[in-house]
Length: 259
Ligand code: 2AM
Ligand code: CA
Ligand code: CA
Ligand code: CA
Image (tube, rainbow, N blue to C red; front, top):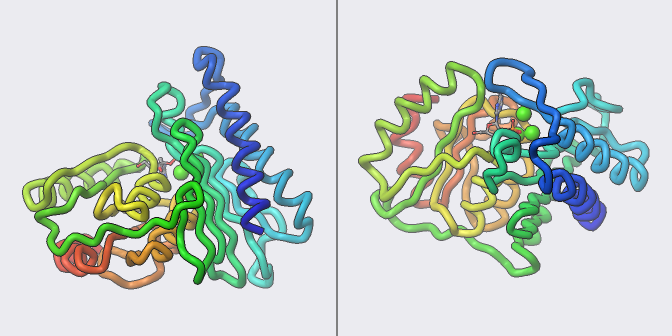
């Protein structure tokens, strides 16, 4: 099933790469204020869904741009959670930080994950219980012992409440860590924690398709994922905190007031 997900991600990447030669011709629609979708998001999502449902016709699908989910109900044994472009605003501007995110859940538990960055050709994969990989090389979180030594990422989506929270979180954390980043793709931010390229990531008001694949990458790379108070349930709430075990514990203490 991981191989099928990788194949789907590569097909989506072909759609995205073709379009990125000519960003002037991408059709942009504003769903809500500062919340965009392009024709490329939609075409990439169709390529992913076609690939997955051809191999597994009775699986359920939850995908960002399709609105209603196919076959999805509490009885679905397998459900794919798809974000065809995570970082659409970056993509529209030609800012090279976006990815394709595909996760498979079995009875509500994420068992397979693919995050693919078509610009760097970075393919992140994980299977529950079998570790996380970047282009076939095993990856581990970096796990520094203190927040003061950490490079952290925090972002915000289009929701105005998320921006207010982000500004407070930035003010709290920036003086306490080595550096703060906000690079516009939740799934890549999680993949970067998994690969030890950053030491922690937190963001509120995300959706399941932003988080599901990246969260499995982090846990399979030896990190911890929870809500701001350390509790599970981040796929439902959309509030996510991910880090190596030592920094995670310190961040829970600092961020619990924001839970
Ligand atoms: P997207 O590009 O797929 O929309 C930016 O910090 C992150 O927030 C991105 O992963 C982005 O995903 C997501 N995002 C942007 N607007 C959002 C919204 N209105 N609701 C939830 N997530 C959003
Ligand atoms: Ca979006
Ligand atoms: Ca997204
Ligand atoms: Ca998206």
